[in-house]
Length: 151
Image (tube, rainbow, N blue to C red; front, side):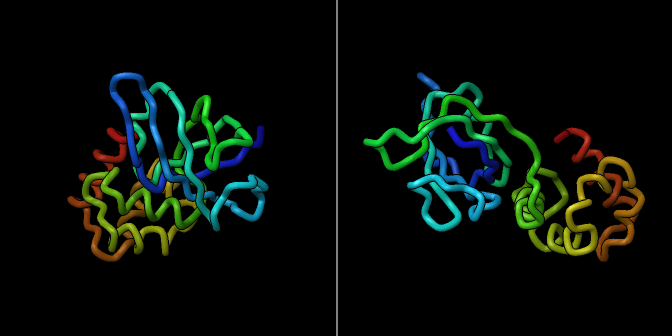
């Protein structure tokens, strides 16, 4: 088994009956992953994992599983989940609609300003959001409320 982090690119299939899911994952650090069946910076995963219906695009996951010799994708036993760790992942996560009030353009401006510290700013220095072009006090308040609900 190999440990790595990835971002959910898309949920391809999920069965409510048995929990089986197929996901396309974008590897956060593809150069550090030696899995035989990765394709560029992505790969497919499948498995019966509880909570997979909650997976959303741009969510960071740490899959635990193996690639059997007869298969072309990662057979997952479980996923640990969390916030994205790469700058691209952070921007994609914010742009995905996960936090109400932040769309693609605003996500880009936020991440351009705060980079890898974006989530720290949202968690501990919310008043710094006023530094982002297009965010006033009212919008900041709405974003912070949505962020609190999302967390």
